[in-house]
Length: 162
Image (cartoon, rainbow, N blue to C red):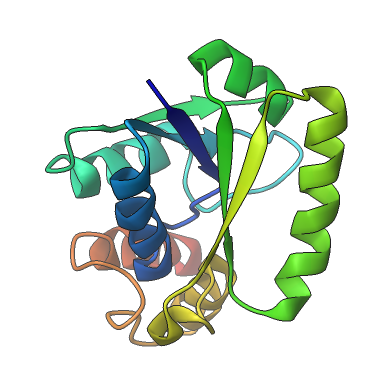
């Protein structure tokens, strides 16, 4: 059974993330979405909130599961039995960093492969950072995230304004 991991912060999950999830799920027997729990980074959503948000969005894709993790990605890959790491590329600027990480992961675990998927052209500009920026100023984020995510993001920023 070929297992892949799609790691990220997903803070919040976007249409670009969902595109990569659906395409990856079609390529592997099992896809584990690894939600990074990084205590050094201040996130809009807690790891549990992000896991719940994604689980709700992927519940119709039978070979996808969602878990949070912290620490090294290669250790998480070993834990779930993954042989591949999925990384989405939006632009050439993403490639340099992602290549460096893929090579580092390969040194740490020679059994792991990194699979790069280029993002759909509709989402090549999109990142969670863009979503948070728009939302922080009260912008319409409905073109960036699924309908169920919009009120969750808006609620976070409404609490910050109070």
